[in-house]
Length: 156
Figure 1 (cartoon, rainbow, N blue to C red):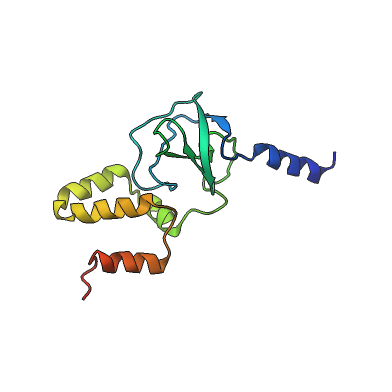
Figure 2: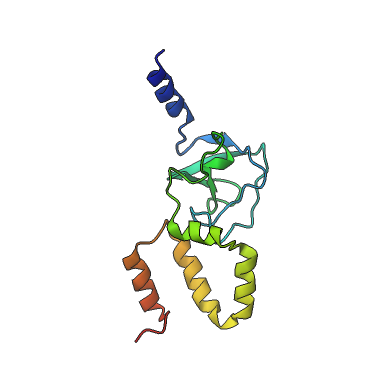
């Protein structure tokens, strides 16, 4: 078998699709309410060795049948082996926002602290969480429309 044939074969064998069952390999794998690294996490947990069925696969993320009853997403790095030094993001698809927040040390604890200090923003945070749960990274036009609809940013 040639080098290229081996690479293509390895890629095809590692592909996952809806209906596949995979085994979680990573300790501390987080289940998210939307297919993104930052945002609301699911209450459900998954431990190494747990077998999970994939309902939907989207850009390195999979919506799980259980735990979470179809409402939780898990990144493929929880079940796939990676090459040392490889990025955890799906093919470099991490948004600049996610990279910036990670670089600043932003965490769920920091978000909780901020929310606690600004209870007047509760409705805005709930609207943002609902918006993020609907899908992947928003376009700038979608963000502008969201801000205008929610009267966020002190606009007219």
